[in-house]
Length: 258
Ligand code: DAK
Image 1 (tube, rainbow, N blue to C red):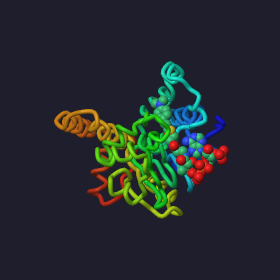
Image 2 (image 1 turned 180 degrees about the horizontal axis):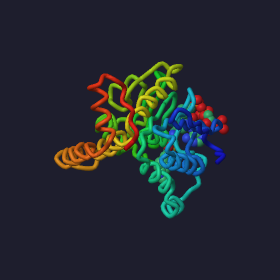
Image 3 (image 1 turned 120 degrees about the vertical axis):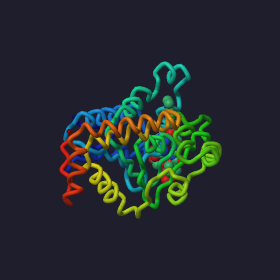
Image 4 (image 1 turned 90 degrees about the horizontal axis):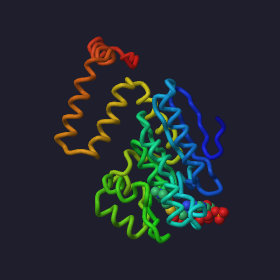
């Protein structure tokens, strides 16, 4: 399928999805989110895809939701139309891992889109922010929720209330991103991380994603139980046998997702 606002390349079991609205710094509109939801849903179903990378350009990941598109909407429009609701729900349903490769601006909905991914690798030029307060609104796709869980109340309040940007170094220190790399190396590093994940058993990869995400939804005791049950269930797979046998035989495991 030909897309208008994203570019998709599938190679070596990795789906690379590049946001592509250069006239608006990749601002999120209905089309972009619908196309993103569509391609991620397709990637989930595609056996050739084992990991997904979402990226922007070197100067911007995404500068937020499209302000031009939103500016003349009413409460009734966004409430009744459930702006971005179906698309973001579809993205949240993807069970394969998604890495956000962020360089330059990741603001508002752009920062929130990065946080919808499973982890963020950013360049040393990355700037994160929730500047919706400057537009007379508030974040609506996780800027007060996922960000608070990622970096804590003090910094989340600071960012959401002042609208200030956070640079890459602070983002790493605060736990928003997993790694910071030089801008020129970002895609290489993100693709290498995706490649590492693609080598693993998809069963354990998807179980990890499910289990880590469960930690945000439940108590520690319930989460520990969930993790332990998943761990036990791994012993019903051929990949558990292969992984442990390969270690003992001092060779690379050949996982078959069984
Ligand atoms: N929307 C539309 N166009 C944008 C844009 C945006 N968010 N950000 C940048 N652009 C456009 C600019 O209008 C400009 O277009 P032209 O004038 O050339 O036609 C072009 O991109 C280049 O921008 P600048 O000329 O401003 O470039 P600078 O380098 O000077 O500045 C900047 C870059 C990223 C600092 C600046 O553009 C900026 O402050 N942009 C706005 C950032 C922002 O406020 N982001 C938050 C948007 S609100 C929802 C949930 C969530 C949301 C919505 C709904 N629901 C649950 C329903 C999310 C809301 C948001 O994200």
